[in-house]
Length: 214
Ligand SMILES: Cc1cc2nc3c(=O)[nH]c(=O)nc-3n(C[C@H](O)[C@H](O)[C@H](O)COP(=O)(O)O)c2cc1C
Image (tube, rainbow, N blue to C red):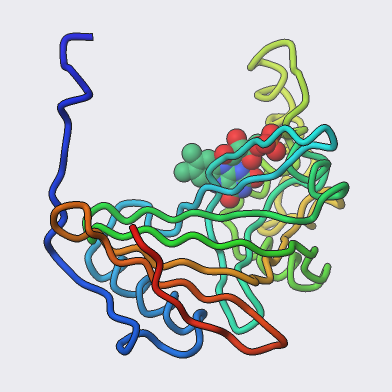
């Protein structure tokens, strides 16, 4: 590598976060920050890292897109037969991380995952572009496939099967999960590595707010 990555450093100076300024409700605080990220045109602002842990205790994580955030939690969509889904069946705990570099912000969330209702998944599936609907049918997510051609052949067959239909039915193995949070951290980069970290912890259905050392 030509560049010495140990020398890469950013000083964070754009914003600050004080305990007295955050919303009492962490979901509202998240919605505020997400809106600011969208307004600032942060690229892929809804992309989040999502972690699972295998039965043997081995963690894995991947990027997913947040599709809804409401008072109950954070929703994403995926394949219910994927590796992540199999791990969630054994251990429904997860951690999500958002990183919005343009705003020098990170949000970390821990929560318990539940499947959303079939109706909610169907409603969202309907709103996806037809090509994405075909993709959901075509891909046995996380399974070994012998070649890319297999996928393309499946895509063509499905195009024929559903010819003339604007909207496809939702595949049985595809749907959403909601992450019901019990912990959230809002991280704001500050000068000299003295960053702001405000955390929310759920205790007996109320949210406790604390500041953590960076
Ligand atoms: C920007 C981006 C967005 C993604 N969004 C999703 C998504 O919303 N749902 C999904 O199942 N996979 C999504 N993926 C693919 C996942 O990262 C991952 O490869 C896939 O879900 C299989 O993960 P698993 O084998 O751990 O189950 C996305 C990847 C990237 C880079």
